[in-house]
Image (cartoon, rainbow, N blue to C red; front, side, top):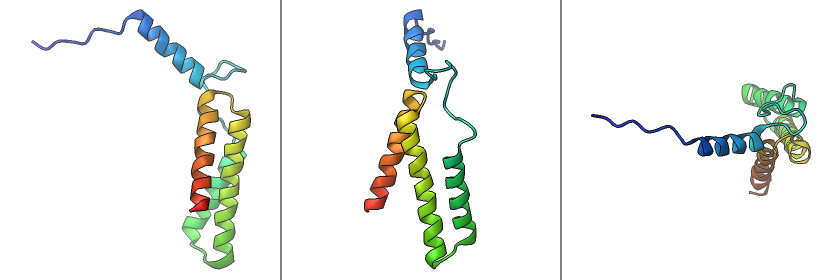
Length: 106
């Protein structure tokens, strides 16, 4: 006969919920803030990198699309680090900024 896992005790669920709220809820509105729309720097990044991928330009145009896309992503990441409405958003900005900077120095 299979055994079923017992539900988490109320204390455990409460702690998990508090952790979720701390990480993902906006300190300003109380709403869950994982994605925010509109997000101009992120939209620019996606448009520039999509244009780069679809058009496959070489030379100065390709370089301009690449670096403009990178600049838009850095703009987004720095904005999240400085003004992110939740710890998750600030951490996501910091990790993204770190990855971009590591890629730039390689």
